[in-house]
Amino acid sequence: LSLVGSEMCIRDSYSTAINQLEKLIKQDSKNLFYVDALTDAYIGVKAYDKAIDMLAKLERLMPNNQVVALNYANALQKAKKYADAENVLQKFIALNTDNFIAYDLLTEIYQKQQKKALMHANKAEVLALLGAYPKAVDELQTGYNFVEDNPLLKKRMKGRILQLQAQQEKLKRL
Image (cartoon, rainbow, N blue to C red; front, side, top):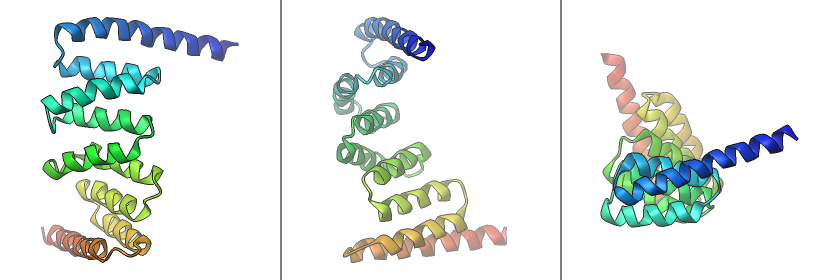
């Protein structure tokens, strides 16, 4: 009984937040603080389509904006629209190669799609951003073992392993 009561209380809190944030966003539709909070509230009540609609419009106005892209990909992922979320993140990462959160979210999306090679390759990028080069190399080598019939991906992964090993050597010399 208390669990049901607390879920209703949380849902009421989200509903109150949504009402307030929708009023605020009507006055300032490009305010990223409002967008971020409203996205979280929509996701909290599983109103994924509302979040996706709002963020899709903003993405056209503000392509590659971090708040918009990451919230959009997250909302798509929660709605189980993994391919769409993957596309949003790939476009974002192409221009923002050092965004830890984007790589981490993309890793999660690849995992949910059972794209093991890409999941490990992406996890390697997360580790590389943290400076954990040996672990990143291990992830890439694990991912390499899952690659089937994609010689380009294999070459890319081998090349990235060499880059990370070179970074590790450079770090050791410091």
